[in-house]
Image 1 (cartoon, rainbow, N blue to C red):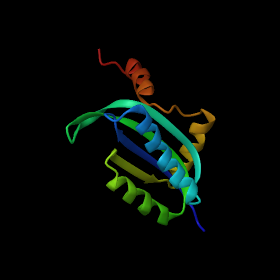
Image 2 (cartoon, one colour):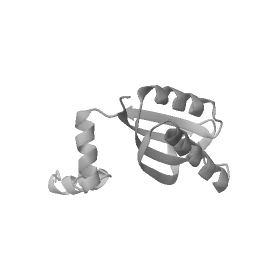
Image 3 (cartoon, rainbow, N blue to C red):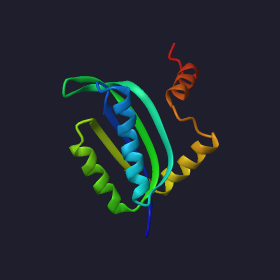
Image 4 (spheres, rainbow, N blue to C red):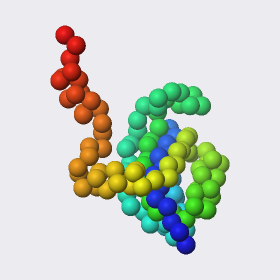
Amino acid sequence: MKKNYYEQLFVINAVIDEEQIKATVQKYVDFLKENECEIDEVNEWGIQRLAYEIDGKRSGYYVNVYFNAPAEVIARLERMQTIDDDVIRFMTIKYDNKMMRHRELQRKGAVPEVFPEVVEEDDDKDSDN
């Protein structure tokens, strides 16, 4: 069975208690494992301010998951998240070859994960005084 590499960011309602948040994260990690997916990394960013208000909420608990999965699993995963009241939003990205090369560089520490630091350094060099 052919597997593709995916990155999924999902945002959990930050109003629920910490145990419910952890249980929600675990539910999706378990779902992936039970469906022959290989989880590469799970990053819990914690509670962050949303870019815009969603259903009256201004913040959410962000989780980023990198994994290999058969394509048909993605539709089932996203269906679960769509009907889950605790998941505010989600976004799944299928990696192509260029993105995979970038991911490998990230793992080796050759590419910073957060780009604003790089932009700030460049701004200092290119000041328009």
